[in-house]
Image (cartoon, rainbow, N blue to C red; front, side, top):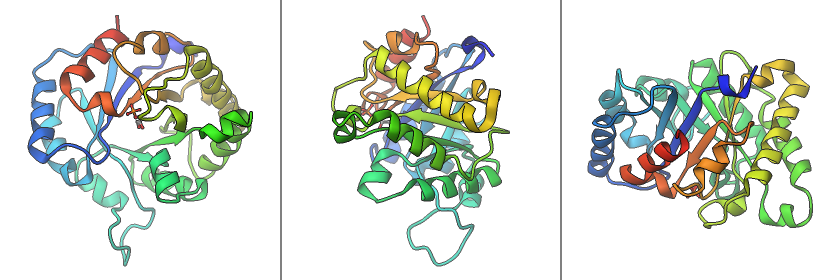
Length: 252
Ligand code: 13P
């Protein structure tokens, strides 16, 4: 499959930001704009806003996802949300194993793959994040980490019907340091080769995004890389103008 046939994704990960009113205003503003029809636009708000934003975006090109999930369907797991709950809120996607979950909250790849598998069982598309830390990069261990995290994070996941992967080097998240297009392409094509080692040519169908200090100035050169199928954007996705500018510059 040609890289051009993988529909590009522009995904906003709001993390623990925005009030309910601001979130709704953001979505209303996006809905009033013309988005390029050949892209997919995903917004990952805090869980409390999932239901409202899913209602607002029904029948639009904007799709809503959760930032986290727990693999059990229900039970005594204080503070967690399950796949059926996310589904009932109308969300269709969920981020699994964001580096903040891995490094601040201690999630392992074994936990990440259980989360992603539970999402798929409910018909929710997991967006699985993978990326090396600065220490690992400086020690020359990037490819080793990407290999082992990719393989272990995908262990309980099916290539069909769908999953998305994001390469987010930890040192590039929220730091203003972006991977060069060459580095992003090298890491993402390496991740795709790991996927190929388990699922063969289905690897060419799976979208792999880049994340880490993406902005309106660097999106064009990143998304021009043949293996980069879109972007997962944090800080620059918190206001509709800068998110739209990224979309515009990334689709010229
Ligand atoms: P920034 O775009 O703020 O670096 O965050 C990236 C990220 O973590 C998206 O999931």
